[in-house]
Length: 423
Ligand SMILES: [Zn+2]
Image (tube, rainbow, N blue to C red; front, top):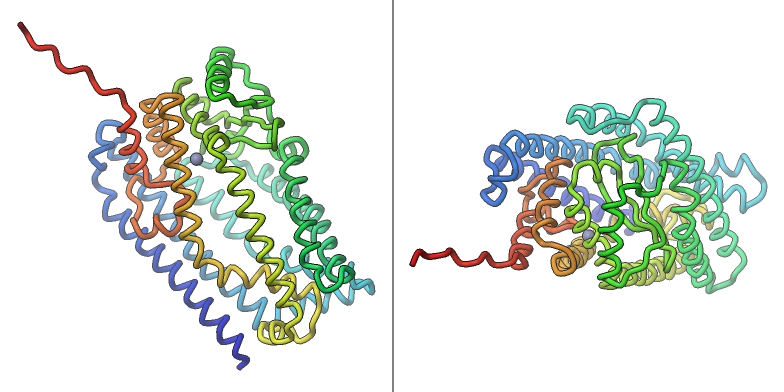
């Protein structure tokens, strides 16, 4: 066996074992705490709601374990099993142009992955989400969504892959630097174009009509010296009853988007506090920090790909008998996560730090009480567990556990006036 094949298989086994172990821990911890509402939430969450969240978390975690195992088998088939090489041979038979054949090769691998993941996606939407009362996606909407997502993937992914392959073939030894610059420009372009061109393909966006809420939001934006171009309501309820709010766009072109499901479940004061939290990610420069970190990580990735693409053992060890740019690209995309997962706890910890900072910002610029109430409401509506396993949470969660967030918010609540004593 090639030494790197061995390294790859050991890293893959380690990754899968850790993922499954964490998932088992999460299931056991959530089940063990499913019979009693944590004391902090005793007045705001009923036992029935708490138990539903536990059952939902466990069901999703079980499906996640199945996905991990299935994904591992598919990855083994694609690499050491020769799947990538076989798809490459089909692509080569379809076109004489190396650029077109290479692009078809990479897209063929992703199309295969998309088709293979379809059954689990169907099960998630129509069985799991349905069972817990969250699904509102009709089969026609599901089919339309898949077709739109695949066409968009073909269009955007195809353009990007063709561009990178062309640079690999023609930009000389330092092609990876040129490819990185192109990748960065492409990402910024898609980020800019997403709310304008692509998001409306999937959802309807209408201007916020509630004038009282609009005035509240304008006052908040004013207080925080923040400029957003427009406020939209998105028809999230067409697919799911889960709620959310987010900012999109770049620079002064930012938009605020509320899911209609969020607006129907929170009071105006709670909506304001949630928005203040989202806004904090911009005011506290979390968003540019993340963009910068992403740009640096992709630079490291392209540099590594630039080196690996020149190593014949990289192909031979991973089931690809002949050297080609398309194989290098697709192998790199498939195999990197087997090694890079070790930094995910650091990224998650960084993200949780930002979440605490955003909560603190919202508490000072809006209202800590409303934010705490909104968080409980959202955890309840989304059936998110209030009692995650500490190790699972430290490893995977981008947001701190609810009890920890509420605990920190308590420090911002105005102290109650001392009880009046009788003379
Ligand atoms: Zn946040």
